Length: 79
Image 1: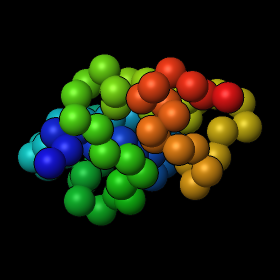
Image 2: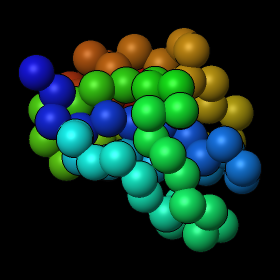
Image 3: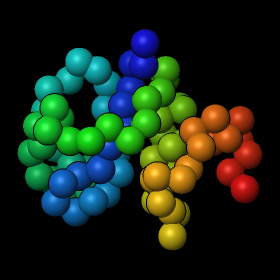
Image 4: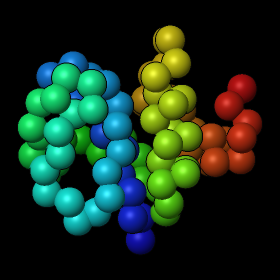
């Protein structure tokens, strides 16, 4: 089971991760209080390091969360 989930803020669209079973979180970018159950989950990760790698990849210019393969990110092969 994934302990960390990656999503985007519904207001500013900045990606971030959170640890399950957290219910709410403030966006680290715009400080909006978000109800996590109302957000789409983009990726699941088993640890914070992997979740951070995904978030950093999503912050890259032109990144599209629909097409990033999480397995490549986990292996360090982002090309």
